[in-house]
Image (cartoon, rainbow, N blue to C red; front, side, top):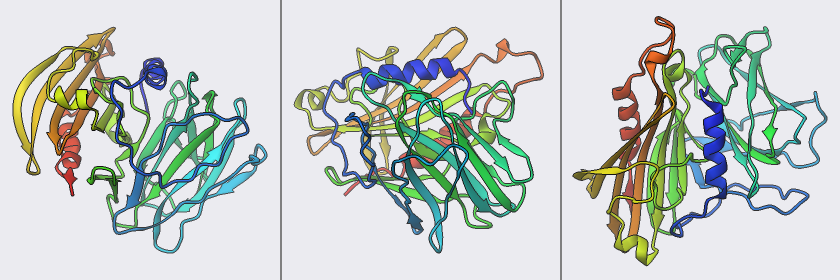
Length: 345
């Protein structure tokens, strides 16, 4: 779940409207998105393949299902996740159902496809057939994602209610096999040969504003609910960018003079055999803190950029005993676990 929703919306709006400083090298698109009634330009989706897992990607196409009718999500035999592409009208809602067993780890996230010049997001409610509510956990909060261990073997109902202009979206539903704490996905960019692997504790998302020089081709959002619950952690992302733009390549490893906060050069750091220049940036405002660990390098005339983005709030702003300081070392480790899989073939 997310704190500071208004800040997130502002970030998404700015990101959706801003033009990149360099042209990113986009991977091919694996998912097929049904065309809406009115032509709009959507943010491209990256190539996503499950690692050692069969997958199903059902596509629900317009016209939309009537309000109140259930949309059942099924995996193929041995499948462990589905990316559901669908549409939803402002002022309506849509409910999906999926069956899972007690103790399995389930994660649900939504990647909205926002038209240029618009904004919006899609809160969800996750409820069991027994009436238990998994998300949101507090009546005064909104549920933007959920990941956790299921309390019972039963049907679970996921109801989406859009806030803003979000005509299309991709909802990822992943359920790990019994006894498995995680499953893994691989990202590939055929244009550069770049690839990396990430677990289901992360999911593709729209990036908030950061110190990237090129708009990210992939933004991974950390969605492990228990890491946020009753802590001052607001959001965590890993951004990945690449571009062959000559000017961007020439200044690739220099600090970004136009970023959200000033950068301090740390030095060179080798990650999985690749020599990156490491910088850091810290910002603060209205009780919010923003930490960015920035890694840049040039390889075969392509500029690569990997950024850890961590947003948290001032623990002193909360009533004593109601919130705890988030585990910074654990978050850095989870981001590092992805970065060490970075490779170029």
